[in-house]
Length: 409
Ligand SMILES: Cc1cc2nc3c(=O)[nH]c(=O)nc-3n(C[C@H](O)[C@H](O)[C@H](O)COP(=O)(O)O)c2cc1C
Image: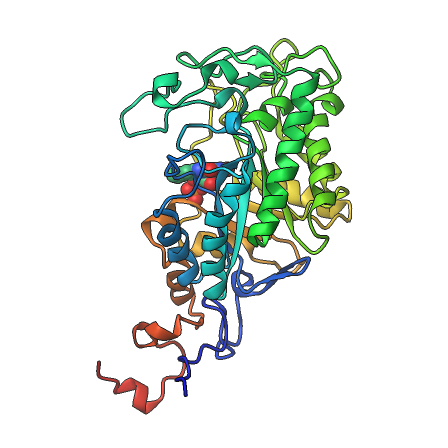
């Protein structure tokens, strides 16, 4: 006879029925067939730890599961290349080979065994490909062939280099478009096979899709450059193809840079918040479930306003425009959400039923504190499920029994 495991009635991070009034942050978020028990999501973060042609390394399993174990409703894995030449560096994770699936599946299965959900961000780095991973105190620079780079194969929206020290990309031609679209679709199919719950398309931070959106990096004269419709064409084509290749039950997220943080003038046009709002209205009709609103990194001269809500405000403007038009696509906010009050206020529904965003994506704070969800819950007075193995460390919230009050460890 085998012994029964410790009982854990809910996934870690789920509020227990003991808390009567819950902040929106600890209410469920339903996205197609997926229900998240809280609204805190681990933002994708490149770890530059896949040195063997995109295959995950022993680093990834403990890295990803530390968040899942401690209550992150959804962890989105790092920007993962859809083509070998689309890696930002020789150390990027990939899903451009069938042999990548097994390593990914191992991480996915471990997260599922912990009762949590996992997504993956798919990327093509465009003109930012073949770089060296950023290290403290080092300038960004290209990875040359001896370092495992592929400077001659770097393609971009136009022949404009990202910055000094990077290569001038080859402007994409007709055959390249087919390859990129197929790359995204095949990588998505592999992600489905590995068991991921969510796919996010990376169309932010000056990587390929983002560089097509912005007129400052896209000066093409053909049907993929010029007008708004032309500059968004590649992204929309990828979304349409990918959406029809993955199960209808599977949520699809898209991350954008909502602004270039540059002054838009007729002689130096930029991607602006207005463009993002117009794009959001289109994505709502294409089966995108959540728009993950980031910003910048497409222009070195960007001027980011120095206040904590710089990106939450962008998400809020987009969400309010969508809701004003009766559109339901969810909006995620990200950027400096690093404490309980900001996390709570980012998604809190007011009396009129409005909120700044529907989900809070958190990056660096999870690296500092993998227990962020559990700690936010305690700070907000919400009793949440802890991993059953750790119950003796869980804070006592609300009405405490005499026996618990006298607990000795
Ligand atoms: C180490 C690190 C790696 C990152 N890698 C990615 C990435 O792979 N894809 C992406 O879209 N954003 C990436 N980002 C940006 C984060 O997802 C997030 O948007 C940003 O850090 C702001 O959120 P935060 O203030 O909560 O950290 C990365 C950030 C960090 C700190």
